[in-house]
Image 1 (cartoon, one colour):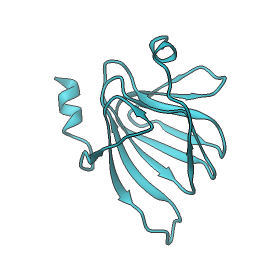
Image 2: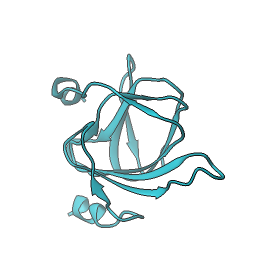
Image 3: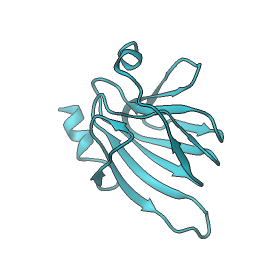
Image 4: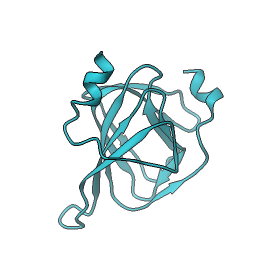
Length: 131
């Protein structure tokens, strides 16, 4: 019940299913796309349980504002960090990382992403299942 309520109670609409570069069901609703005055896009990303994005980097960096559920954030070579509602993640430029839902919870965050993203390989099931 908790996950169903979360799915339907995001701040912004669920948006459209996104693919490629994601494993499982993930949805994106763009909230802000104007280049002025912030020069950044803001997307509301909703991950179904078990869903995650591929490893990737950002030319300028990224900030995640967690608005619901529980998820993971991992930088290459570092242990994964559990994220919960209210957490903020500041991702430096060119740091290889991924983020997504835990196995049993929806996960929703706002992604502030100036600049471009370089998408890389998928987070394999073996890596994910060890969390």
